Length: 354
Ligand SMILES: [Zn+2]
Image (cartoon, rainbow, N blue to C red; front, side, top):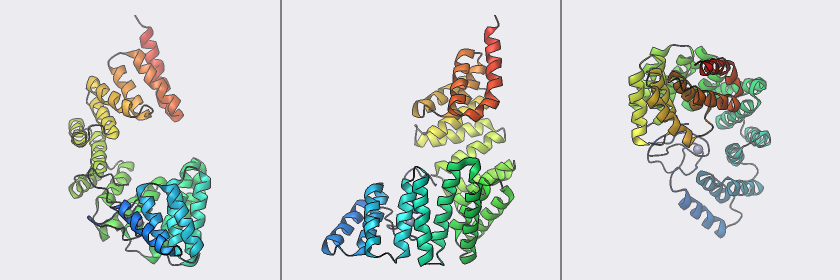
């Protein structure tokens, strides 16, 4: 996802980024702006002719763009009842299922719809990419047991790229998936392919993540710099640069980067956590506690913020709050136990000292 400060230029339904000023998504026809107006227009068309399947589909997309997914799904159902042979209607409904998905059953419904779209339009790259998206979500739910879904997603993306090797979005999805699979060199290569077609901030950011995972922080920083240059208003790009500056030991530069984000939006929780960590690493634990406490007011269950604030308290020899933060962090995220339990034991020992 691309997080922009001022304008949302990403399709709510299919996630494709839209050209600045575009009214509709070029890929799926969902309104990017003026969704209410699009919904009214489609509603009027439905009133004139209730058997106009395209009008129902249009209203479904407009309602999805507004975030009313329950109503969007009813409209999408109606469009399919009227015309079940349109691959794009199946795709729309699948994407609505995917947006609304909380559990496996929703993801399975989405996958079924995408499979149907693929049967009707065997060369559809969008159906393959969407199916890969749903499979990746399913794999996330299953955690370590999600390997078969990630394998299947990889196949769908590779098939889609065979059909359309010039689709930047497909290369970016592939790069993301390669990172999830721990295949960082392949991820770097997929991002390079995307960049060879079009230089975009998201492509630089995904390559930055792949390079950072390989501990190639200096090169990753070059990518993050490019992303910030291409999309100066993108918080995501600046957050990525902040993380890399911390990895490179440039703590005051990292603080400045996060401050830039907070200057535009003072309640940005990720930026507060990032700046808190940068200040902790830069031996400013008091200021770190300020940032992390503000982040925790916004997101009380943020394990990263609790871990870092615990460390800041520890640095100040305030062992009781350090123990409390680390205990809560372990409760929220049990895998943190391996790292935090020994530190907590140390804090308990020190607290016991006179
Ligand atoms: Zn779209």
